Length: 395
Image 1 (cartoon, rainbow, N blue to C red):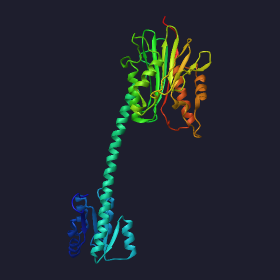
Image 2: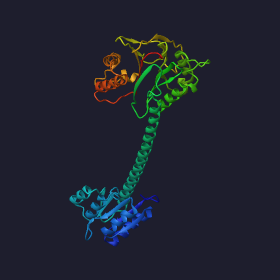
Image 3: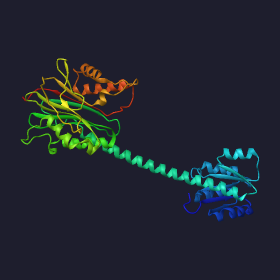
Image 4: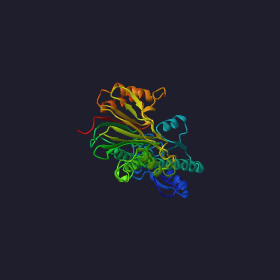
């Protein structure tokens, strides 16, 4: 497409007088003109100079205008160039044939100055607009490709922050599944050893999806490390879970990030089997006892970031073989075709049915059950499940 003046027009006619007449009409209007007197020359000029419009005579010796138009439309480099046929033939059949070949208009001889200028102006403008839209779309495609690559890279970083069971925690077996609804999501879980016998395990779910939610979750994850200053108190002892949530609530106010998040934070001592936990607006953890009983762990407080505070701790003693399951609401709210949610009862039933299986296999059963319940529907929210099983104190 030309970038100067009104546009570039290729005139094709085997009669020099007709070319001079067209030039006399178009040149004063500011158009850059190219001319050809046969089909071969026209095709070469069109491919080389990419005009904004071709004015093509129908009746030419050898290959007529219909043949040349067909060649232009068959060549990807010239297929998008609009063609206006010029002819002394005013019959409908000729016009229909030209339009079916891909021409955009038809002008009959002798030329009327105003008609030629009007038709040329319309189609040159449309050509330029179409080219601009194509360029803009190509730019958007390139930007989207780059964004997809960046999102994939961010997703890999986020996955690297999810706990994989290494190093092993004292007295515990752990397992988890993380299924983001997009390339990156707002769910995250992890664990760390705090002392010779104690560990911290946590899960969080930032509101929303995509990069903003993932960035908040990653920042929160960095806070939940020894370097973050929340997980150990002034005496380097494990902080109470409620105190950890209070600190997160203060550092991640909604006004700062325009995001809330829910979280469950657990401290476990393998020497005594004592579990201390607190949840901030998060689905309550499930205690799957070795004897088959199930309890929900309900202590906690409001959403993290709400500024309300008032988190409370829950304490209990685990027996060897007991399991605790942390999960996000993407699990229980995953909908089937009838839009009914999976729900907590189905989750408990799935976990109970697999309680004699290895912990990792039991977590996998939950994901399989969700996919079967949704009958292939994509996850609309991030799905995370993080479980641990008590294996006994130090020996």
